[in-house]
Length: 619
Image 1 (cartoon, rainbow, N blue to C red):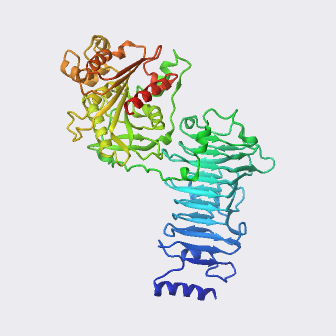
Image 2 (spheres, one colour; image 1 turned 30 degrees about the horizontal axis):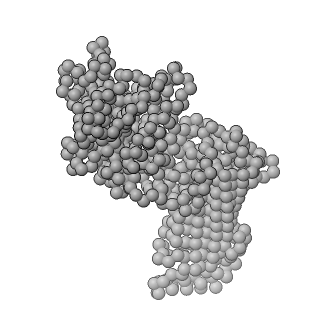
Image 3 (tube, rainbow, N blue to C red; image 1 turned 180 degrees about the vertical axis):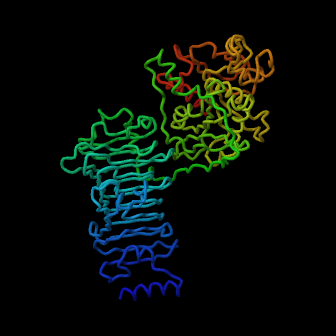
C-alpha cells in the first residue's frame, strides 16, 4: 500500500505537472510516507504554493534535514508533545574535527519561510558534550507549541541575516543551550535549566539591532539548580535581552558572564527590563549590563524585533597582490590617551558605544589602486520615513595617527538622537601628505551624497564634526566642499561645522609656537604639510580654514579644552562670521585635557552641546 501511494504521487507529479500541497506521514505505513525525511525529499523544490506535511503521533527515530530548496514548507504534528523526532549524535561520535558540533543536529532547517507546530525535537545523546537537537539556518521561520530537548547546545539559532520566531515553546538544556547569531524572538516560552551553567551564548553579528530576545518567557530549573547565568558572549558583539520575563531564583545575582574576556564587556549588549521573580533583582548585576527604561521595554514586540534590517554592503575587492604596504603610526589610541590622562584625572572613564548602531561597516568609498578607503555608517532603523540629516565624523591624531573607531561613541550618540553619522577613514601623513586627507574626506562626502537615497540620508542637511587635527580638517572641508572640489555636487554643501579643540589657522603666532618650533626637527603639522612654515608659507595658509570664511559659510560650533594652543584661529573665525551675521557658539570646558571628548565626564557635555547645536541648525 505504501509503495502504491508513493508511485501514484510521483506519477501524478510527472503526468499532470502538479504536486501535492498536503502530505501525510505515519510510522505504520498507512499514509503517504512513513519517514519524515522521505516526505521532505518528495516535495517539490521551490514550490509556488506552500506545502504542508502532517505528522501522525509517534517517535520518529531519524535525522531530519530541510534543504534550502524546500522553502515555504510547514510541518504540523497531530498532538502537541506526542510527535517526537529523536536522534543521538554528539561531538565525539560525529568526530569531524573542531566543527563537529554543527553536524550533530537531530533536525537541521535550511529553508526560508519554514513553519513547524506541535513537534518535539530531541537529542537524546545524554550529557556527553555538544549535542544539538534543532539547528535553524534560515530566515522567516516560526516554531509554535514545540519542545526542544537536549543538554549542551540544544537549540542552534544560526544565520547572520536570519529572523526566527519561537512561540509558546519549551526549551531545556544544560550549557549554552540557546546559542547562535540569528535575530531570534522567544515569546511566551519556558526556558528550563538542568544544571548550573549558562542559558545563552549569542554570537550576534556587529550592527544588528537585536540578537536573542526573550519576551514574556518563564525561566525555570531542576531542583538543586541555583547558579545559572542568563548568558555569556560566544562572540564579541553578542546581544541578548530578557523583557517582561519571570526569572526564577536559580538566576545568579550578577546575571551575566564575560566568557573570561573583559574586552567583550565593552562591545556586548546585555539588557533586561520589566522582569519579575526572584531572579529579576538587578542590584548586584554586572556593571556592563543595561537596565531598560519603561519606555524602552514598551517597544519590544514581534513587529519591532523581527522587522527587516539593512544588510552590510559588499566591500570593494582588495586583491592581495596589489595592496600597498601602508605605513602606520599607532601612537595615538584610546588606550594611550587613557594612560596619559589618568595620571592627572584618575576618575576618567572611556566613553562607550552600542555596536548595533553601526548599520554598515567597512564600506568602501574610494579605491586608490588597491588601497581601499572605508567608512562606517551609524543610524537607527526607526519608523521615521523622512531622510535623516547626516554628520561626518573626522578623528584626530596629529594628522599622522588615530583611526575612525575613536569617533564611534559620538557616532552612536548621534544615531540614537535621530541623525545618521559617518565615521571616515582618511590617509594619514605617514602614507600621504596634504592635501590627500582633505581630498579623501570630500570623496567620502560625495559618495554619501551619491548613495543618499539608498541610506535615507538628506544630502541637503549635512554637517561635519572633527576632533583636534580632525577638527582642522572638518573646518577646511566644511568651508570648501561644494565650491571647488569638482565633484559634480557643487549644489550640495556642508551646512554646519563642529570644531572640537582644533586649530583654524596655521599662520597665527599661537599655533606657530608649537607647530613650527625650531627646537624640534619635525612637528605634526610640518610633517603633514610637507615643510616648515617659512619654507612653504602658502601651503600653511592654504590649509588654514580661517581664510575660507565668507558670506556663504555655515554656522560653526566650537567646543574647547582649557589649553589655548588648540583655540588658534577660533576668535578670528568667529569675528568673520559675525561680520556676515552667521551664527556661532563657543563652549570652553574648564580643566579639561585635550582629548576630553573620549572620556567621561566631558563626553556627555560634548555630545549634548553638539546635538543641541545641530537640532537648532536643522530645525
